[in-house]
Image (cartoon, rainbow, N blue to C red; front, side, top):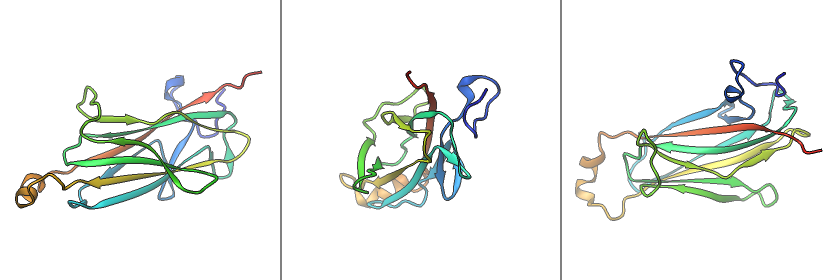
Length: 168
């Protein structure tokens, strides 16, 4: 039996989804952000939540998850992920993705957070912030617009979640 109220799948455990990203009041397992409107030296921030409940009904098991950021990195950006500290209410640095990060077989830069967990005994949200910094230092400003004018880049934010079995 499925133990999470919003689990979906085709009968195979690897297809199940146990936690969701909440962005602009919509739930999803992945989120795509276009960087087409980002200008040199500009910083954009996007906030989202990871939740273990939907419409007031919580998951029936503890949930583990991590977050990955993926991009082709066509334009010179630094992408930073922050998680809100529940006690201080401040965002704390989690990871940074830039041209020095490792690429996968699709030539995308993929950066993955550490593992987090959500307790099934209460409705929980973990708040995150993605900061995108369009670097313009060390570039020739006169040719800048010609070099990057027709390029569009995207960031895919994905959540990978699983059930955590309780130890007796």
